[in-house]
Amino acid sequence: MIAHGVESMTNEQARPGEIDGNLIRDAAVSAPVKWKGHVPALDGVRGLAIVMVLGVHFIGDVPPQGRLESAVAQLMSYGAMGVDLFFVLSGFLITGILYDSRHKPAYFRNFYARRILRIFPLYYAVLLVGLVVVPFFFDVPRLDVAVRQQAWLWAYSANIYLASTGSWEALPVFNHFWSLAIEEHFYFVWPLVVYYCGRNHLKRVAVLFALAAMSIRVAMVAAGVNEIAVYSLTPGRLDALALGGLTAILIREPEGLGSLVRLAPRVLISSGAVIVVSFLATRHWPEWRAMLHEVRQTAFATCFCSLLIYALTGPRFVQCFFQSRTMVFFGKYSYGLYVFHFLFGYYLLYYHTVDIVTGWVGSHTLAILLQAFLATLAACLISFASYHLFEKHFLKLKARF
Image (cartoon, rainbow, N blue to C red):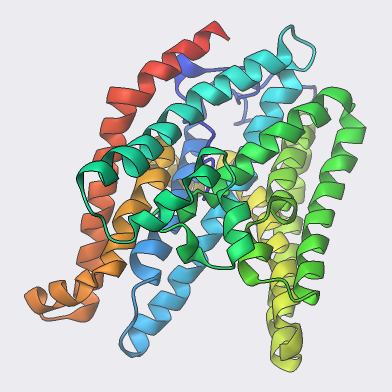
């Protein structure tokens, strides 16, 4: 569920379009800035996104018992918005990279080569092991369903197949790859947009993409299209990516960062007002619930754009949170965590392991928390190993592009 495709930024992997951490301390930028280098706060934003996703799949998806667990499950369900945060950050970083390199030689070759080296090795290695090797040796429950439809996964079209069936169970174990497909589709289109549009035109296109995506979702709801299609088809999910891209362009304008620092609170308040009003309106006009939800989703994406600015220039306690070792750790390994975590989460739900753990500890609530902790730990360990033993060797090749 997202950038998830965008790599963790490390000093040895610095590239055009990234942000110089020494410059963001001065919000009143008076001239265009060449943004480059490593910004731990953005790793922290990515870390927050993956923690939200882990929360919804390891806690929110577990059937609750009692009011407390129901309330926590409801809260954790908003962790699905972590995908939108991933999209906003991905749009921000990718647009910055493309915009800063649009006049350089081999613009398209370098961009796609670097994206392929970051995304493809782990993605296709997991498909190879999960859909070819494992079924050959083991009989894994429900995996045969994904095996029969694996062509959609190999072609980065999981979201299209899920939308066509209207069921997340159409691709067991791998259904979370829908968001990776959306990002890949975005990479097909956005480099062309950035290359051929000037700065002002690019801003207009980004706004148009965001409004069009929200309108498409609303129209699909009105037409009675299934919920999964509304949620996962690419045209309706470009708003967060486009708004992140818009933020990247605005921050590169003269006094851009200073302007965004002043604008961020207003955007946050106005977007928050849309969210609150939409919730209240749902109470009075429940028949509009689904449509208002789609408007609210774009408002959340707008809030996440402000969150990016706060992560870079906000109060010290905010920056300390996003630059903390914990958040940066989750951000650095977020791609692997996203890919691997659902492999655990799916089978925890399939085998109802929380009931087994409850028998051990004598508390359903404690069992949920313990299970979530152990699943997160396992996902972190395998992601850490994957990065250092496998992915990192492909990342070193990016220096050639």
